Amino acid sequence: MKDLEQELRRVADDVIKLVAEKNAQYGDAYFKLRDEWNTQSFCVRIGDKYYRLVNLVKSGQHIIDESIEDTIKDIIGYCMLELIYRESAYRIKG
Figure 1: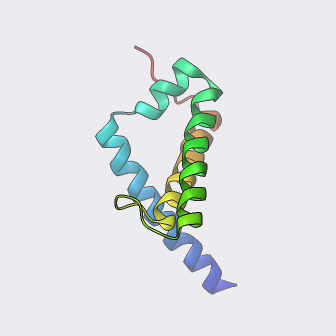
Figure 2: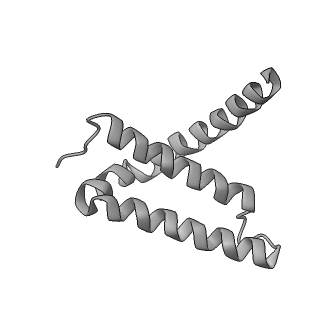
Figure 3: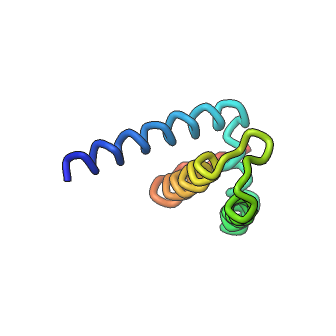
């Protein structure tokens, strides 16, 4: 069980780094859109990633530097952002 916990932490750390980098590049875009479009923005982003994942799995190929693993990390990242939005008073105003 200890090995699983270590692997979970390693993967989570990778996703956290990725999300933090993308959030800095996009300037809190997730939270801004979430404020504007409510839950729809989360659903749309997860939907986009879901269909990308389906296409990657069906084709068995990488699409423009996107792998199945990259897409899974993106899905996890959006889920983490949504949890942060819901659990805290993290709101972008103005």
